Length: 141
Image 1 (cartoon, one colour):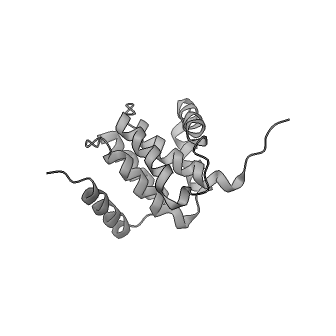
Image 2 (cartoon, rainbow, N blue to C red; image 1 turned 135 degrees about the horizontal axis):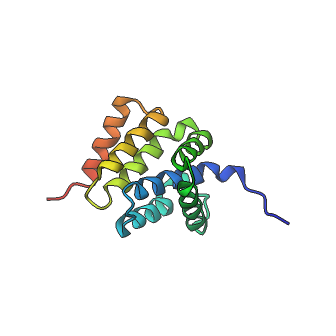
């Protein structure tokens, strides 16, 4: 007997896919990016009712989708389909956090972040504010 998916967790999966996608954008998922994903799931209120044991499963499913033909498009469609619009800015913010985790944002990550911003319909001003907040949180001397 197969276990039915909990549709209430689809927004969680979409958020995890968002983070994994950014981490995998440059084909190098660093320890700091993976740690950021784990910390995000553990500490953000949107994940309060999410089972942490689901993160590796969701990450693996995302990686498998990404390996398919048109995988990126399939993942982006899943994210925009399953994520409530009120979580669009949250998704963009956590994507930026993952990109900033290893202190070096690659061109691939920048392109993906731009795609995400457009797909999530995050406006220029909110995006600039979120980006500035990410920069401020990750500033070093």
